[in-house]
Image 1 (tube, helix red, strand yellow):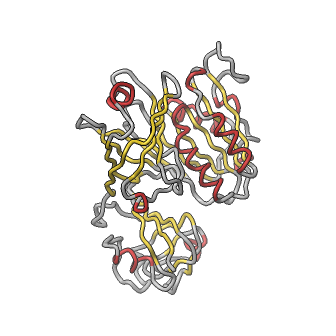
Image 2 (cartoon, rainbow, N blue to C red):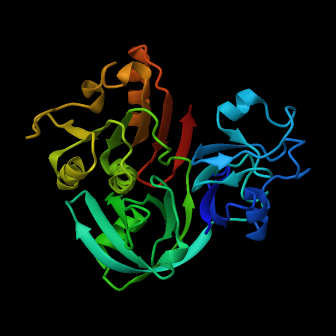
Image 3 (cartoon, rainbow, N blue to C red):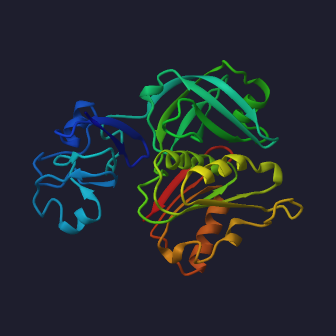
Length: 343
């Protein structure tokens, strides 16, 4: 028997290892040729100190100078001493390059192309080594655009347990992937991608959650909801989904399905266009108040274009509410991706 441990590095690259309950995470990491920070190996120096964001474990033996009781209570741990009791997600305080590792590479075949509207296309892939692809719900990969020397970054819209992986793409004039998907793409095409990457991913929910999506920023939240469908969080989860025009709305039927199978999940959507047929016109900030944020006792996950992300952050500040945790990701049509998070 072994458990899966996700090692998320400072540069956003995530590598997955298998760890037995009778071996430390550091031992399993080095066995997989991933050199996480390590020095003393006996819980005395604190060099390997990391943050466990999900899962249970035995912290092992260590001295106060290496890890204080307060740090341990906040989820910090020493991989050189800890042994898993479940799957784990660890934030490692170094880059993947420093650990002598990097993103994994995969080949895949286009299995489906779905044109939702003039603005949004979804494509699905059959991955050659699907059992070798692990990711955290919310993460992304860098996809090589066929016939070009360019890559684009897309978040999974599928869940980690689903055999086919899928992605939502915003169609933009002059976009390399937009041109491929609308002009040349065919089922059976070969694609390559690297990953997974990103610090925007679902943590273990210990309180209510508010999910906010702008446009195709819905993709990583769909991945999170698929995980919740398989592993119900036991906490209320509310999603606010905002788009510019009616044709930008996608997967409302999918959200309805999740509302049926994920206990405590609800959602609402709005359209900025005043001529929209939607019940609610405007922006997601118009659907948010202190109660929506459970007066601060909520984990917030936000993905959308930069202007939306900044507007939501400013609106939350104006409400005088500080969420228990706030994880966000900005994206641009050219797929220049920046990630940040604040606890």
